[in-house]
Image 1: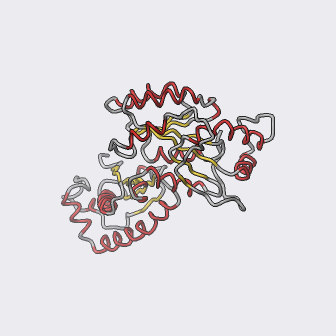
Image 2: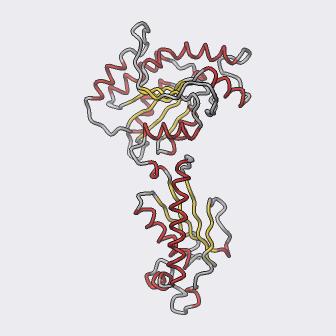
Image 3: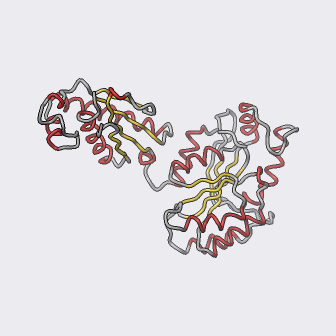
Amino acid sequence: MTADPERTGGDPKPSEVPSTASAEEPSKLSDRRKRAAKRAAVARPANEGFTIITGLSGAGRSETARCLEDLGYFVVDNLPPTLLPKMAELGSRPGGPGRVAIVLDVRGGVFFGELSKALQELEELSVPSRILFLEASDGDLVNRYESTRRRHPLAPADRVVEGIRKERKMMEALRGDADLIIDTSGLTPHELRDRVRDAFSDAPPEESLQISLVSFGYKYGAPRDADLVIDCRFLPNPHWVEELRPLPGTDHRVRTFVQGQATYREFLRRLRALLGFMVPGFVAEGKAYLTVAIGCTGGRHRSVVVVEDLARFFREKHIPASIDHRDLDR
């Protein structure tokens, strides 16, 4: 069980630090650093292979998993460590997931001996792996459990603080072998996602937002999943030009007609300015998907031209944008 992080007062400032194990702490994954050093000598893309997401319950594993999923990772929750090599085999097949994140926690017992053996097998298969460990202060964890009214997995009939103490002790060795530790004390979910994106995404923040542009006809109804709906029925309609009526909005003759209107040029200028202002705000809020629907009467002419122009606008800014002309062939 995990709870999303919430801001609480009086806690230490959040930190994100590479970990080092204490010399006094015997690690059941003691060979991992040697394997990590060997992997560092081999140049590989930073985001390939396996990422193990683990840490304290309530420290933000679920939010981290969702963020990695938005970054294109194939995320598996609570997979037994013994199945990691099998997952690597599936991932190496054509069409398989190139980047995999596995969530491990005390719900499955976190079999440290099995995990060590599984990581060794991944090394033999030349599959890079790393451990991301999430933690938070006792005060933050208690507050999060109180806000969600859920029981700690290690204290179903006991105080939450006692479950936290047991879990810290269980996770001590794994924490020492982590490649990256993120302390989520005082972090909001959006701030945690920013930390994860900074650590795992090679792309600038704006490229983490996938924009879907949909043209549609109001006569068939507006898309129900749209975040923004723009009505462009006020523009001159090519439908009333006899030679343009049977042509789709992707035809250069229809485009020339629509784009040649002074009203259209001013409309597009203002629409670009509006979206250019809004998109950074959506990115800052951690939004991963944005659907913008542009509607005209039948969805075959004006809305199609607008969507095509907006797609060029976003791509010029290196923001991924997909196109769906929903009613073009009706």
